[in-house]
Every structure is written in C-alpha cells, then in structure tokens.
Image 1 (tube, rainbow, N blue to C red):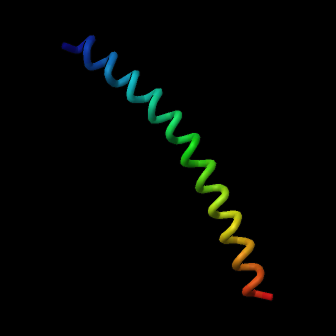
Image 2 (cartoon, helix red, strand yellow):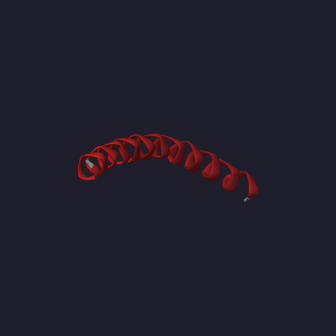
Length: 43
C-alpha cells in the first residue's frame, strides 16, 4: 500500500507542477496588467 501511495503522490506532484506553471503564467499576466492599470491611475 505504501508503494501505491508513492505512485499516486508522484503522479499528483507531476500534475501539480504542470498546473503550477500554468497558474504562474496566468498570475504573472494578471499582475502585469494590474500594475499597468495601477500606473495609469497613479498618473
């Protein structure tokens, strides 16, 4: 059962890493647009 858990956790980790990359990309774009909007408001 420990081996099964290890396989599950490794598969989950790979999926989480791929999801994390996509999430970081979206968050980066969102923060970039947020910063642009904030700069326009500040000016």
